[in-house]
Length: 634
Image 1 (spheres, rainbow, N blue to C red):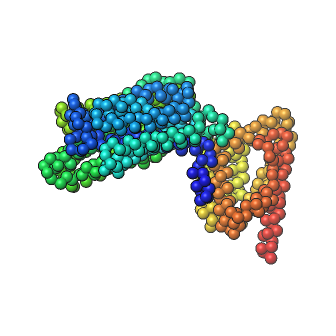
Image 2 (cartoon, rainbow, N blue to C red):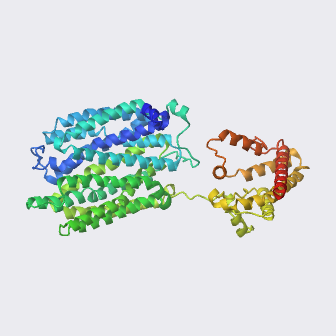
Image 3 (cartoon, rainbow, N blue to C red):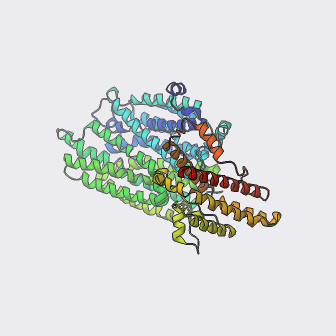
């Protein structure tokens, strides 16, 4: 891959050890998901009587219960393994565990292929090797290790879920494409993928404590909002989240897969086949419909972080439960209408438009658990979450399948609707925990009007509007008062160059006044500090000045970057071509902006010299501006 990128002059993702490891983590999750869902769309045909590859018998189960018993075996294996695989990775390392799971899954795919003629043999193999398909909690714990930013962490957790869902859909697509080769042949493709994943994991994945990760950089994607981990797990929140996720999984089962199989499958396919009519929904069409629902999770996963920030993570969880119940009820009503093409179209549109809103509740679980996990318990809590969710995913479809066989499809779905609303009630107490409430960012005092200040005037200054010399003098006095009271100075917005492009001449015409005003303010400050005693009074003034200027580091960086963009846009728009004259531009900047001081802060030792240099520079600007004005008038 590296050679290919170099030959086409593309960015090489594997040049960065950290990114290569993260890309491989996503690929490992994708492959495990593909392998776990390869045959899902084939299960109804494996337990039926119409396909040549179907099991000879599925006793003692009928169609629905047998259909969901097979995936239950695998998901139970994953659920049991998830209880300890995350904790195991806390002790022996994330990479070793993911590598072991990949290798064992290769063997599992081969064994399952050779049990295709025996229903119970296949189910036992499905259960045993399900233990090795649960790498998602380990991957989520890995994300918890390498990210310190809460927002970036939630973004990456959402990305992992998107890869997991994409893998589940990819497995179904492989099964559909290989339908002419038999129902079980996709298992060999899944084994090959897991073998490739094992090799890639060995080559590219790096454990969080590996020194190569620290040589490449401290932690990837850090920002200013660093998450502080608790010292111990809040057990009431932990079990509330876990129990709520189980209830959510049971309720969601009525929506997916029950609304598709048996509701849609019977109503739009099997009833027509038994009546010897052309079905509205073909067999392949059902498989594609089943598979593609999962793709609707991807946009939800990508925007989940923004939804959590706007709505609140606990609120999103509860709303997701309510949406699930409402959507399931609507689909049940459509599925009981007369089977027409128009009704089927309404069913599909409703399903695909509504499903993305229902998965938000499941996307909240991993971030909520990560927020309450101490550093040495990340794998444990994610494993516990995965175990609970996989247990629900494993048992719920089979229980609902048995219920559908005994009491009818409609009754089973009505029970699922009730459980969805019950899940909302179970998760409602999460709204009261301060640990899960949305972060309310306090606006910096550098952007606020303080009591006694002229609100209209300061708002105009903060908006980045042009100020007259009198206004500049007034701002100087306001900032001086703020500094003396230990408050930060005002920091105006830096407008984009495009917004001020037509005002350049206005800025130029007032340049001399601005330089003179700043010249006078420096003289004022020099006069103020001349007679101060260096050890006490001047030291205190310097401390106040430093605190007032650098009170908000994030704001300092943002405004500096905005000013840099303005300057580069101005150069490009005025014929300087900075992209090909970077060294010349640097030399011009150094000449135009001589250093005042290279010390980070003002001290009694450097403040006099710094202010004198500032005064000398303003004096030169005044002189140059006056000469330029004279030449222009000539």
